[in-house]
Image 1: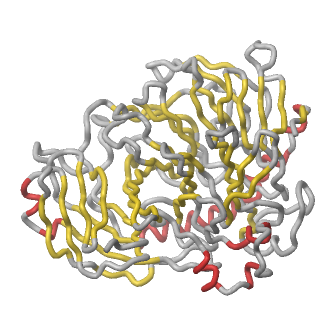
Image 2 (image 1 turned 90 degrees about the horizontal axis):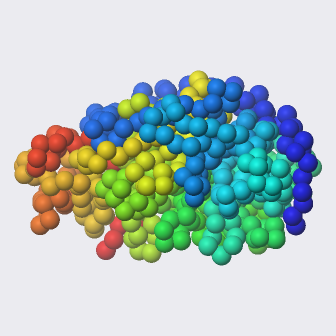
Image 3 (image 1 turned 180 degrees about the horizontal axis):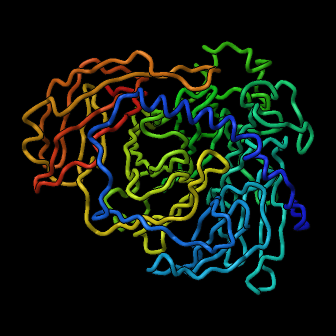
Length: 522
């Protein structure tokens, strides 16, 4: 049901609770991550992305706003819509000079931890707040919002800082998907802030004390809610691929050995058990007392796992390259930002045995890129990726707005990877130098897995070196077949490529990739 809301309803001090209650715990986690990263296997065959290929620029925001970005989008006029955690929505007219954007204020108020924005029209936006999905409109055409409407608040809110709501993602039929995150033991819970309270759901490190926390849900235009998929922890990122498949990132923690990327299908359970208390078909009682081996058998595994401390520390929004080459050679692939790292990853997916799996590789790391990489949008011409950043009260502030522009020059990179019964086929963005096939020592491989259970994160388990038995070229000149001994399903297989060059002498920029091997094809 659509209800006009008084603007003062959004000025609650709750939106400050993230930094009040989360900072101490997060510092402890960051310290652990730094130690873990120092002890983990290094990635010596990685270079910073040179500006010859992708140029990183800082966008200057108005001086009066706190630059904590929760959402980005371009409207049909080519204006950039920027959703801010503490300063509502601002709208900018882009410029070739990143210091000369022209900004205007669309709303004059803070929102409650907004984590996404969808443009409905020039004068109407959908924004997910912690408590609801909100429509924000300019009804009189003066360029300033004057109407705030509740589209749906049929998911609960306990008042905990961790209960973020991401999206919305349209399903193409007038509905929207939201990613509704769990609460954390590090902050307060007020039992009946919104929705039904469950004392069983309240248990655990990350928990689902109120309805549909830890779910992906679908919202109908009338505001009614369809529970879609359960089992998430901190699903700070949701996106639809061009083929209408739905994708969500989640964060390492309890029941998450490392951070995953999931392909979402209706009715599936994705591993974090607290949310099962809101599944009408669940008959197992207290999910945290249910046998772990049975939960493990129930869960849908990640399509891609992101090794903690090496590839990604806190994945945020995924975005797919829909630009048909205007942003470089990686069309249709996924990019994922790292909130707790100065990097963006590239994800190479394939379908094997009816399931998705694939590899992660770094796209841009450092190279002038800040941390806090939270939200993305493409420029209207498709040549530039805009990156909105916030640490949201975590660690040293690295916040603001940047853009990554493709110069038109293609770097030498692994373009994609395809699993084989005895190894992989790697395809590159340029023809490969013949020396790439002379020495198998240029290729190293190892495998491991992570624990599944209630403990926070997991070390690598059963780490094994996988002998590379042969390397051979394919007829296209851009592809290499690498055969391995000892491949096993349900493992991460890491490949290290060193001393590889293109035929015209370009060095390989990123030589470390991690493939999530759920299935080995026959």
